Amino acid sequence: MGSGWQIVKGKSLGAICFSILIFQFSFFTSLLAFDRTNVPLKNWGGFSVNRSWVYDALEKIVLAGLAEQVLLNTKPLGRVEAARIVEQAVRRLEWDQSGDYNHRGYLEDLLYQLVKEFGLELAEMGVKTPLNREAEPGFFGFNLIDHAQFGIDFATRSQRLVNSFGRHISKGANPSSTLDGRIQIGDFLSLYYQPEFSWDKDGAQGRLLTGYGKLTLWNTELEVGRDSLWWGPGFRGSMLFSNNAQPLEQVRLSSAEPFRLPWFLDYLGPIKATLFVGRLEKDRDFPHALVGGYRFNLAPLPFIELGFGRAFQFGGEGRGFRGVDFPRILFGRDNRDPDSPLNVNDLISFDVTVRIPDAGRYILISRDLAFYGEMGVDDVRRFYPKKSGGIIGAHLSGFLGDPKLDLRIEYARTSKIQFTHGIYSSGFTYKESVLSHFIGTNGSELYGRVSRWITPDLLLAFQVSHAEIGPTAAGLLELPREKRNSLGFDLSYRISDRASIFLGYDFAHVKNRASTAGRSGNDSLFRVEFTRSFGQ
Image (cartoon, rainbow, N blue to C red; front, side, top):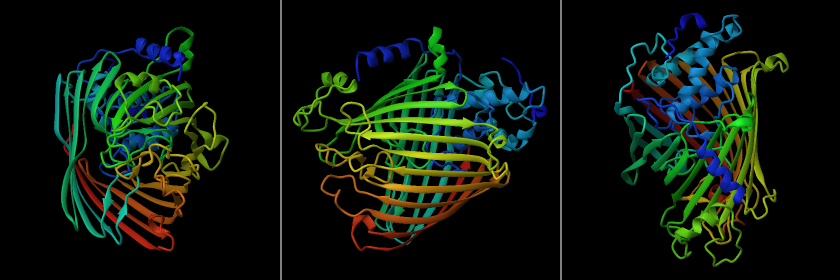
């Protein structure tokens, strides 16, 4: 596989100290033409569901051992972060003189697509291949239209889509169109925008779904605007943040790329840190309440990734919050007085992912294997797991010995108190969608997905789910949970280098629809999306 590649070199005081240490020792590689925008948590062009195909592709090459000690579980990844992983894979194949990766030839098409996607970034890193040899990074970069997408959803009943930015569709046809674009100035300023237009039986509407600017200095990145987060290893949801709700208006400070600490702390491996504050909607218990959070994740060993995150819901009209209260909220100042602005809705999560390349030597049913788990705890007081929920899952790449066949299995369960709060009675939601896992309070889901590349341009997948979905708002918690059994498929086909089509169908049998006892029936949803790329 390497023969075709040519490379040219080219909640305490301790928490405060650790945060300072992280940004103090962040490293930075000064280059001229890096686009620092994020890889979207949106399905542009198919070959995945509910997020960019890039994330699935990166997981597959990391599971194959082509990149080590990488961080995948704090999303979105920046384009440079993703390109660094691709760079590792390309260089490893180029330097594979003994043929250790000859059995990975089936990844060639996938890696080619990644090199095409990140050609400019790779060229700036000194990686030249036949696919990006003509790439010429510049101080200014303009992709005024990176993608354009046209789609239509046909539904037999009105419903809210899962992990689709809080989108609600009506019965019948629901056409939509969207595009995105990127602008880059040097290595310090990047802009991204994605307007969306949709139509249903009530008329047409337009919105800026995602739009933000990024300012990068050293290895510290400041993002301001509207964007989504996904914290944790789950494929169907998270205990803190996912793209189930609309993107939040936020200010985010993070390390632009993973970094290592000095001296003996280097053994912790690459580390990534993120801190943000976002604003919720007006129409809720406390108008324009705020939500914040921070997350650290690291990879101390080539096959292990660890993560810790905390989220807190605070402020809002009538809560008496002042800016000087934020440091005490940020570092876990406990206050149980319901009238105090320091009494916040507090959530934490811990997660671990174990990746085993060449697992087929030990487990015959899969070539490569990943196990992951996340524990979520709500209303934290003493940092011990009380009434916790969580996610466990497995990703079997090369299932049954077929290198192009993948299987994902995931189980999620939430407790009776997760995503709820005695003061913030609207729950951990944004515009009626749960910010974290769509199953809500006291919910559960068993999910399975199998996908196979039929040809290098055709991906077929089937998925099945048994879910029980609970309401999160106080006063509704005693209502029955909605029970939803669903089965579906999706097909992605690359028509040309710049055009693709995505088809999907889901059938669900629903009981207690919208937590209303006795409301049962069948839902069908058919999706068609055509995407045209105009990028590099």
